Length: 439
Image (cartoon, rainbow, N blue to C red):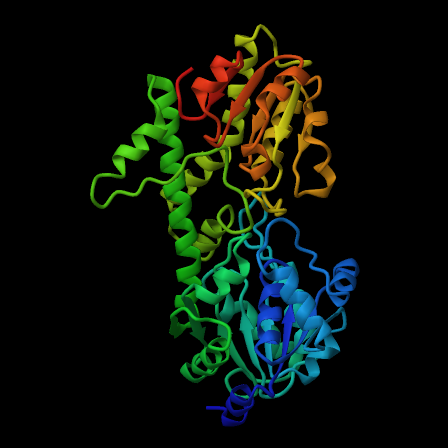
């Protein structure tokens, strides 16, 4: 074991670097800075760096504690941001938290950002440093991509001159700090010693359980847990479609199903977004040669189809109101993938909007947390024929339906998140369709 590195971590004299200051890297950096470590963050976006160094969080939406924490650690001098990878030359521990998407066509990992970060780090890596990859990656990526890239660019040897760990994040926007502090973490080391040193470091910010294992197991655990959730959501979505077809109510069905022991049917909805669930199932099977994984592939197709099903509901609702989709004015409420968040990655609303445009509709978008669409809600609704709820932001839960009805050209609502009461909508004279319920 590298006793010198362990001693610096235990005395909090170790210097830390965090590469990638997004939804993962920024709160990680801020929490370690609060714990007493000197932390430098590295990102490629100048505007983001400027905001951070001014003590302003670039992450909008409801993110409890992050803005105050960032202001605190920047003003104390414990955390700063830069574009310059030479800042890693003094780092004893380096966290990598860059995006790892999949190619839209091949569904294979797109590691351009990861390889770039690894190469730049390798050119500036301190001998004896611990490198921790928090990004979600396909099984065997630590062995086949991370290790050789750092070795080739640094001239150093893994497990001798530097040490590798994969500790995948488990974060949800809106709960970033809470998740880091309380969620159990899988700490996968290229060696057992590396995992133990990383666990010692994480213990300064993580109150949850730390499960030590190898890199491959850590890669499998993270991708499996999100593939599992994707499959379960797809099942709920299929049941919703069945209920619509036979005249049932999926929300009542779900409630009663979940009273049976061992059953936990998830919520159906208008689509699955975010950076993790839409791509992690593909990462799980990316290197599994000879395994077709039909269930995982089918779940992806089902969940990707849900925004298109919402478009079908819009068409049906408009026809019930005596209107056709071509030329209709549609207000899409919500563009982030998650309520009360500004995270638009893999937004289901984007797929819905594209489909509505194909059908000849005129689309207007509102989202209080996405600056491009954060105008006045009632002005967005003015002159619209149909409003489609795609994201259950608090602002939409508090809608004044009377004022809404006065401003719209036609009184049509499609609810993709089960937030509005059907009986109330009908009593107010709205044509109302809701996912998972018969017309």
